[in-house]
Image (tube, rainbow, N blue to C red):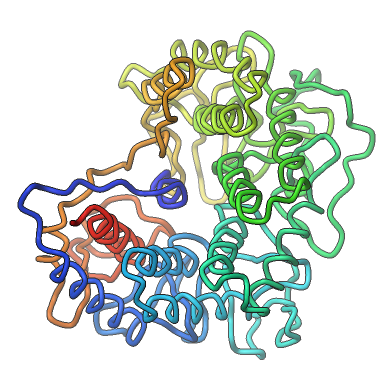
Length: 472
């Protein structure tokens, strides 16, 4: 969901004229953060959802007692909230909380340099990875799926800054992680979904540009190790560039800027030709759209196209290079003519025909269809179009105005500061009630079931911190 993306790019909150004073805001923040660090944390890290009575914890599925989640809105998301609170208050309590959170992530840093979706502190568990600290002999696959490694790297970079680059454990972890990320980049600038000890080799792919498959893509061209291919799935373009922007801003190395430019160049060459000048989720080394999971067919993606356009604008502003704007008009025109009757965009559009493409499911078998009446519920087959926000951002660039950040607004309106504080219970918890909405990790909550949500905690802390920054 785009909510994750919004947290990574920043949150802007509404503050009314009669907002609580700074002391009330600080008191609410301290109460909430104390509850989170003392009651919700496990080994310094976090999952997505926790039962109010702590009888269960949930990430992408039920979590073990010694398991924390890296994937947002897990541990890095909460850590970022602590850093934002520290910046707003200069209270060492929040820096200490962020350091504890950072150490939990560093415990789970893989030998391959980055992270998988969770960290397990039980060395005997099958969920424990092959960690650099030697306390685990499991899987060693670093992933860029779902903002996982990107969110951990960005948080640790900012933690390195907050500790004035003096904490050797944090700084060394960042160096290893960023070097691993850069090492996974293909010669043409693309990134894979993940890597283990040795990043995949794309062979002789330089000089190739996006094209349509000449074979029957419905039945041919599947590659088992799709994670080794060129990937843009789940907003990878936005998350990777955001991470590299942060690294370059703080460390100033040419290698970060070079990686950003090369990735931008890949985004240009991977734009599909007419009649669909958008982007796919996944490409083979011939730069043709290709299958990933069995419900992710070769297609042009509305969501990924929007994410690429937002990324190209940020690259154009950051590098001051207009070439990154050149693909945008044709892609925006394609998005407009591809909008569904209800104003949304399909996740997938069939190659060349541009018909919205969906899946039907019978047991474990998926089949392609143009009918949207019986869609599997575990996947986002349609998304609210962000075309107007992209057009506003492009106009701001042409008018030499500051680029709106985030380019995409939050999916739901920000609560007021008064509402945030009044919703804090006596223990210091914000309790959410399930109302049937689609949630990260797809927990099987019952209607009206109560839970504590790391995303809500982090967003509220960010909004309260923003209030302090504007207070007299």
